[in-house]
Length: 185
Image 1 (cartoon, rainbow, N blue to C red):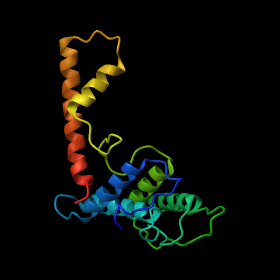
Image 2: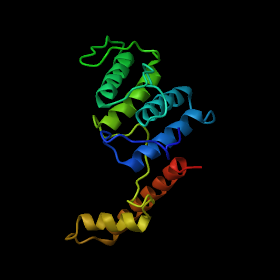
Image 3: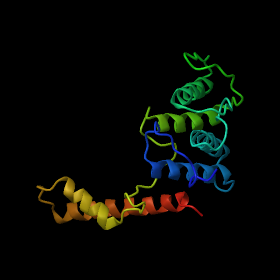
């Protein structure tokens, strides 16, 4: 499913732009056979499948169940962790489903994505570009001004300003590179 047509449920914690970026990036990494090792690609495939399931594009990444809501997503996330650690699953209130996919690396990717989508942790399954509200990537100048504004009463030495500018320029370049991977083709 195209991340541009995905439906992001209200219970998903990350913002829409981040989910769309992660969706496209994990698919591109999964499909890129050049320059990526197999475990990184399989992990990205698990993450892509999890995001695609939550946004309505395919069955669940581990059980291949079709239905999805917050409780089922939590159960799928816990099941991914059980597969990763080779532990039995305790289902609780959700109807049990046997895992169809038992690959540990795939489960790590699916678990990373589901945990992020559910807000269990803040780190996305892949590094994401920083976006401004309009979807653009901040410039070095924007990031530099932000850094200075964080400490408005500081007397910045020329060396500190130079260091702040270098950090801003590096960050802006990294965000542009990530955005190229995340932007629609």
